[in-house]
Image (cartoon, rainbow over all chains, first blue to last red; front, side, top):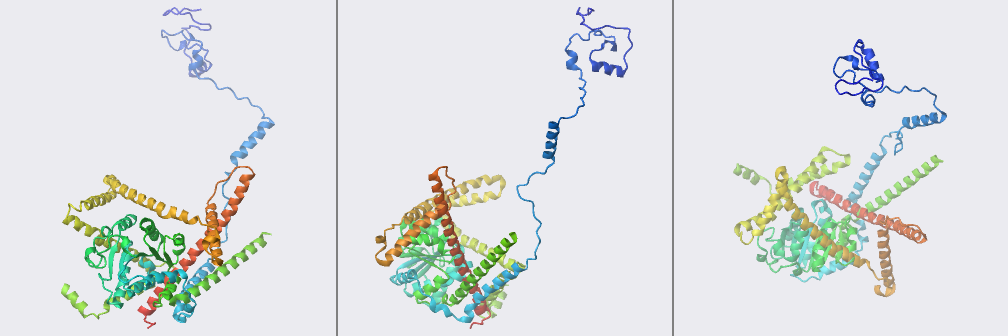
Length: 386
Length: 237
């Protein structure tokens, strides 16, 4: 045992002090580090020389460990099976949620294009039918009871009473709605019923001006300001209609044509609220406009509300008609022809009945042909499947 | 310049404006109908023109009929019509949405717009659609209520169809799976049958809407063809 001259610490077992040994080569030094058991005090003559291995745990912490040599052995059968399973799992492809795309034979899309073009031409022919046949089927039209009742209710309006007509449709549906609006305006003007015209759509005012201009040409005694007036465009949708329901003069400060206050016009001077008109007639090309009138005006003031709409919109408003919220509901197209018969008006829409009949036949034929073709294709597919 | 223009216009025939209008309308109608040959520049031009003219007309009408008359009132009598000033201020604040740094100011008018709009729409839908429609769907199935004779029975059938149709269509939107047990199994089967009937009724409704739209479009097509034949080509006169 050797005692340290600095601290009188006793050296541990195996520790040696050597001052005469030559410095080790790098390889020998590495070897010494690797074993961790060699005496490192031979590297220099410092005061700490010979104090190695004072703490037995120090080499285990500070010195790198030599890796444990791998023991070469044969894997067991279980291990080989597990390795094979692992290899298969790793190397197999990710299962796709969708089946792999099947290459399809691209067919030339000739038949669909020809079919579409043929359908266009057939519809065009149906629309041209009235030009050649001259309304052969007009005599088949029988106005429905509801339309007759509506025409009679307009006939029963006293002369001088006021009716509010709202042109809530756009020029896109002018072809369908204009004959209806014209027939209505003619009937009201013929009975000297005052017409107060407005619109909740900007384009509707232009259409209203066209219609009343035609009526004014036909009936010069039906004058602006005395028999009819155009209030203009009502902005604000729900809010605008609510305001109109409470006060007409709050919604419209002046009329649209002469820019005069409503109190100055004979036809509108007694018009304070919508209760002062006999009924409100809405001409619309969408169900939302009519629904707004029902929700914001009719349900709050119980005024009489009639709706003249396009044929496509009519089914959506039938529930309101059945519940009594709409007194009358009439669709354009066929409804307009029925109304012309019921009101003994000029036959504008009646001329189109041949076109409607041709379109009806065409639609039935197309439905039959396409369904038969579909069933045939289905049978063919089933046979091929077997 | 103005006088020269007036001179030219004075020498035009009296129905020149109408003739020009008819020609413009006819050319645009042909451009729209050219869609039958597929998408083409003439169709697109007419389409854009239609949208642009409609937007321009709406903007000019909003100025002349809505904004300008109220601005004049505010200018003439600000003490009476002060609230128009408030609304104009809100309207101007709405424009700030276009500038990112001050776009926060636009939230106030938007809040007013959405708040008032939603309140009116919801209140109206409740009192004008939901409650009246629910009340209307509660129909009496007593033939005596529908009148005497065959009309009474027809009314009874009508009311019955209404009730069954309403329940069936509502069942078509029932997607909840019930629990175990014979009662739940029976109930599920009833819902399945009613749901199938309801889906059929919905298809019938769609068919009616489609048929109405087809007639509607035929009327529109006829009106345009009638314009071309009678007013433009003058073949029908």
